[in-house]
Length: 127
Ligand code: FES
Ligand code: FES
View: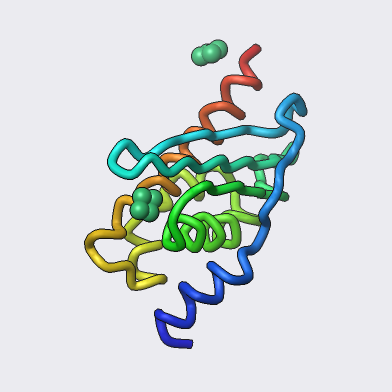
């Protein structure tokens, strides 16, 4: 699949669109916005008792690259431990989708969203 096809595929058939129950103690929610374009991304993870992300959902109100980035990211993180997922960088998304420079912030939005979701999940475990 060429990169163009890959972006289009994630844009036209986004994986894991939807919501998880934000009140579930095992669900972390990240809601972030990109100041430069106003696009908004919500990304949620459900973590099991072994610290593994067993489910991930997103809703993105934004451009095609932001939708493709969040779709790809939810596929990347499922089945991984929180520890491993914190190491994921937006540059991996940029490479995977071959995003052009003007679209790099769309992948940053996805990295920010997963970080915020993990932060929310970890805060819930403390309370
Ligand atoms: Fe701003 Fe893609 S998220 S243009
Ligand atoms: Fe930060 Fe509780 S909200 S530790």
